[in-house]
Amino acid sequence: MWPTRRRESRVGRGSTRTPAAAGKQPGERFEYSNGGFHRAEAIIEKVTGNSLAEEIDRRIVRPLGLTGTHVRSAEDTGYPDLDENPLRPRMAIAVRLLPVTIEMPYQPLPIDQSDVRYVHGPDSALQPGVPAGETVELEWRGSEVYPGTFRKFWVHVPAQYDPAEPASLMVFQDGWWYLDPAGEVRGAVVLDNLIHRGDIPVTIGVFVDPGVFPDAENPKNRNNEYDAFDDRYVTFLLTEIIPQVAERYTLAQSPERWGICGGSSGGNCAFTAAWLRPDKFRRIIGYLSSFAQMPDGNPYPDLISRVPRKPLRIFMQGGHRDLHWNEPQWNWLAENLRVAAALAEAGYDFRLVLGDGGHSPNHGGVLLPDALRWLWRPSED
Image (tube, rainbow, N blue to C red; front, side, top):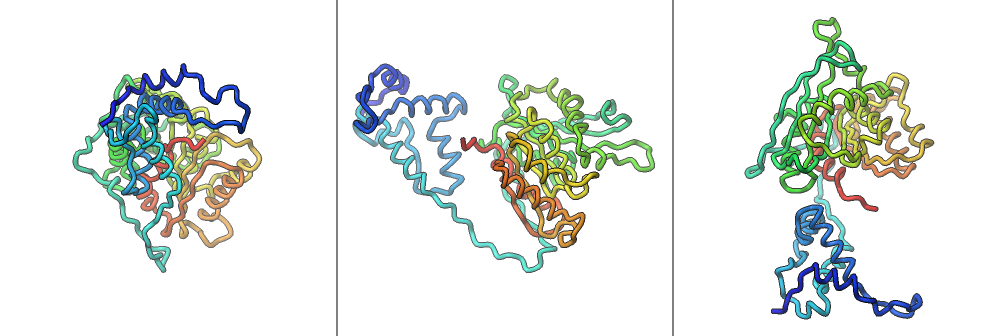
């Protein structure tokens, strides 16, 4: 066994020691410095509340399925000469992590692409030992943006929520469809599972139904709210719905921690909300988005190509047999592909997943755990 030294003393020692390479010209001498690594380790522990070993295991080792790789904890003293090179074991592990290829299991493609159903994974089901959050149902009748409408919305607060620590925010359109634990999306169940495991930050989910006009002959206001290319809906969220949530719970203020999700018309609604207000929302999930039925046509392929890139991260899901998939007009599949192509050419941080089947929330619902993990992954910069 060899003696241990507190990280604080190693950081301090590295901060005050004059490097042996000081004063040398480039190329004359190389010296490895441990101080930066120790500082990074301290920052990781401060921000996450977990050790470096736990965070690398959670973020890298387990997602990649690495069965023969681990980071030694501070208590594991199986290497000698700590004072000479306290990072030798950890640096060796870091080098081993770089050249990893993820192998995907073989899955035969369906011959009939129109009648396909995807099976939900474990993150979309209640799991033993995972504490359930609290879901609060609210009603809203006093809209100034959409006068005369009535709607319900639900706020799901995870068990890990601490009022002293601002929570991230995820807004879901078509509230109950995306919240229903027996439905295709099962938003609250997914949030509880991912937060419990530490895959995403503590996040409050807000599930907002579209408005209706009670007793009207045509009561639904969904398409008017979701398909419009204007700022009414995002203004409605920011001035009427989210303030009611913020009165009850502590929300993070950084737009990097606010996301918005929807499917069909709710998908282009989510895109429009973040596109027009990236100072508030910077994380987007859009399933089978109805860009094809926006009243004045799909504006995004042109806008994305000529407007300076916005700080958005976008997860899209499309279907090979979406509405009018093989027709020259009103083609849901083609319009989603055009948006995705524009995002790719403009260098956006986006991901497109194409599946089989028609205009159904099934595939998007199955993808929600992966979409959230991808959306909240650490920045690659």
